[in-house]
Amino acid sequence: MSEEKSSIDGLTDLKIVQFPHPTLRHKSKPITRVDSQLKNVVKTMFDLMYEAKGIGLAANQVDLPIQLFVVNVAGKREEGEELVFINPVLSNPKGTDEAEEGCLSIPQVGANVTRPEQIHVSAYDLTGNEIDMTVNGMLSKVIQHEYDHLQGVLFIDRVHESSQRQVEMDLVEFQLQFDQMRKSGEIPDDQTISKRLAEIEARYCC
Ligand code: ZN
Image 1 (cartoon, rainbow, N blue to C red):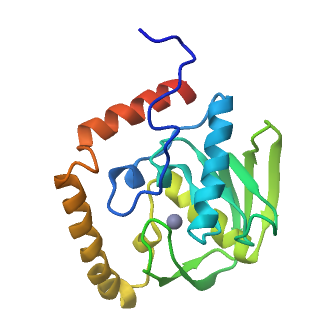
Image 2: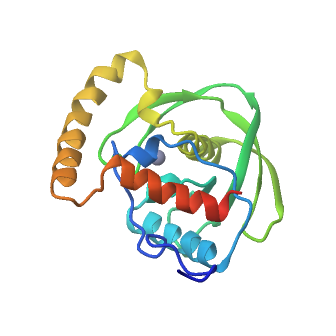
């Protein structure tokens, strides 16, 4: 028996998971409660993002099944603005723009992706305040990329046909590495991963 507010294993030792980790394909659930442990998770996500020289990081990239992502387009703690999006909803896409994207869960792989140039995002921040903003440029691209993560979608699903073959070849290496980590027990089996995700959902999403 454990007391109700005890911490969940795995919420304190976060790291960025890489393709093809199954949590990257998990469709995240809306968050219904924010506690101090979740605030620590957000702090750690920013740390991991800066460490990896990224500008956005979604919860399923740190093996969590919840609708949350963090962004700082400056990519440095002491610059730009740290944004936290909880339960984001995108609407009103306008225009199109093509740009090269990469992902901290698929390092060293990049390919062009076409997305709406402008998007409206509604969400909540960590203190429960509503976010309501129309975004363009880099911020728009990052928000759309991170939002995709929460749906279990990766940028490699959206690359142009002309780059697909190259991307597929790049991914073979990731699959081999993943198989190796599974074999060594470094990555648990699917059942163990699902059980843990269900525990976290039971705590934050009901
Ligand atoms: Zn990504």
